[in-house]
Length: 189
Image 1: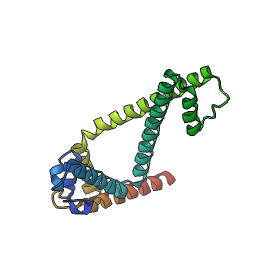
Image 2 (image 1 turned 120 degrees about the vertical axis):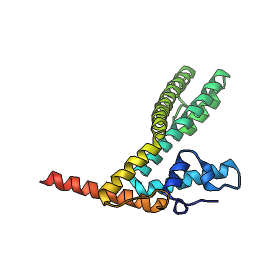
Image 3 (image 1 turned 90 degrees about the vertical axis):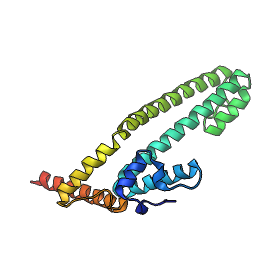
Image 4 (image 1 turned 30 degrees about the horizontal axis):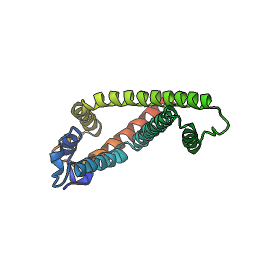
């Protein structure tokens, strides 16, 4: 089974990112393929766009935090509905909201407000993720455009069927670095 970016050509990598997990030659479960896919994509991102990888991980962290908050405050809401306000206070205290001096109405109001905030944040993050999903549908076209830009910049042909994905990722990062340097030099003039 293929588990590393260096084992793929860029053509195979694009196929993989577009959903063709047969490229991995998986001999196990779908979970193994999903883990290998995630690791390979993250390896590519770490090489080609380290800043983008950091922001991606931040978005994932924000989504996890919002999801946990929705679960915690839904649990508190359910406890309050069952007239288990003291247990809801315990959860709120563990969450970091000191609710021991609050009356029952304030506890319920705070739970409702925090649940609404968390649900709004989760919905906003999910909406951004849906936009990213739409962009992912154009992966092949984006890689083709990027390959054309690389060939024009470096003035040599790139054969996606033979070039290794790691080499391609390093060309992308070098291209981006050189373009930024050129832009900075033009601004100084």
